[in-house]
Structure formats: C-alpha cells, structure tokens
Figure 1 (cartoon, rainbow, N blue to C red):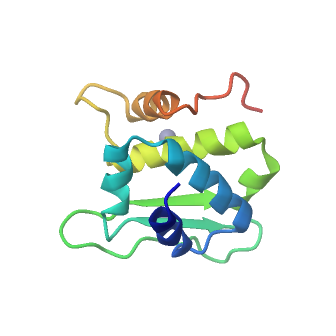
Figure 2 (cartoon, protein in one colour):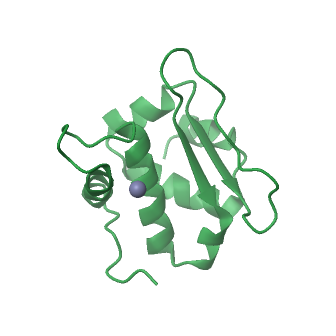
Length: 128
Ligand SMILES: [Zn+2]
C-alpha cells in the first residue's frame, strides 16, 4: 500500500489493529473504488468501543450530497481476521455504492456482499 494511502488512513485515528485490517482491505480495492473514497473530503472512517462509548461517531454534513461514513465496532477485534475484513469490505462497498444496489432493482446488501467478494473478502460460510 502506498505511503499516501497510509497517511490518509492515519487521519481517522483508528485502533491499531482495526487500522491494519482496513489497510489490508484498501490494498485490494480496485483503483477506481479506492480513488472514489480517498477523493471524497466528506468520507469518514471511525471505530468505537460499543461497551464504553457514550456516543457513536457521525460524519459531518457535506455539501449537498449526504456524507459517507463507515463506523466500525472494536468488537471486530474479537473475531477472525477473515470476518473482520469481510465486514470492512462490505461496509466500504456500501459507502462506494452510497447504500444503493448497482442497479435500481438490486438489494443493497447483496450488492455489498458481491463487491466485497469481488475484492477478495467473501462472506464467511458461517457467521457465529
Ligand atoms: Zn450491509
């Protein structure tokens, strides 16, 4: 992964382990998807500990378009790397697709799973 991308990810101040998972996922995104997210000044990535946080981080309002944000629970750290990266890829896919399907008819959840799988992060066979 490029130095610029690492620097860009640093701005979100993620937990170190979450940062490593996010970096691993970003490294496998197609350039067009990566550029879409990195180039959006309103894009927000955040993590929080649901057992301690008093409030969930939210994106600041952008200009016109609703801003895109991916908020990850630190409880991901108790899951396998494959599961954590699948969740991150799935959420980045939602952000890229602006919570829509790739067509008007497509279910946004199926679209996010399909893109995540295309990027090398398929939904684990068993989600406990
Ligand atoms: Zn989803």
